[in-house]
Image (cartoon, one colour):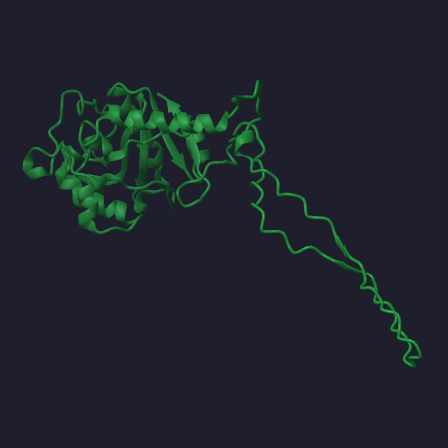
Length: 321
């Protein structure tokens, strides 16, 4: 998830919007999605203050006039070409992903305050993933980050979803104050649901999950007993190299007795020589050390074992709404 709140920025995810052509772009020259019943009928907050102070979230596919201003807002944090960013925002549609914009005031005095992007979670039909959150730099420090998240939760709940999931690099305390708790990783569908059925994504997700579980719990029965976790089977261990041959002793050569009446003294016997055997052929390298079981993964608000694609520490959180 990409987050930009209270003057700090971070980007924790990969923008998948521009990787496909949305099936939702069927009307208005391919730029605006046709909304389905129930998508954008979220009731607006009661107008307790003046009209100029009214704050609300609107799906951007209902407001194509805000595509360029919203692209500039997101690009102010994570630079990209305006055309590519507009193309990504045009993927917003009722079938997800959905890009929401936080607005204040009436049309004539309307101001763009922030943007959030939501997508489906593979294997969790009642959950949504918050991919990115950004608040306008000139509007920070006024509580609009909290307002944007509250309005996003309200929109998701109106659509029938029960949980929001997200990741963050350094805003875990902010989200904890909003009711989010530490969680385990989930698979974000991103914009792939626009051209890949959720059933196919779920199938791949289960295959990957089953493989990881098999690797973590490799306690298979071998030879009538259960092997330790991470212990390779006996068939996979190469045999040890043969022992080196024993030392070879070469006796000294026989000394011929001197000829009779010779004035040359006999030579002393040569020393006893021990010849080392030649170096044995290079043996098969030993197997790598067996990984030790480290126990369950522990995540706190100050430490996390999870890393993003760049190797940066990342916190996984969710909230039931």
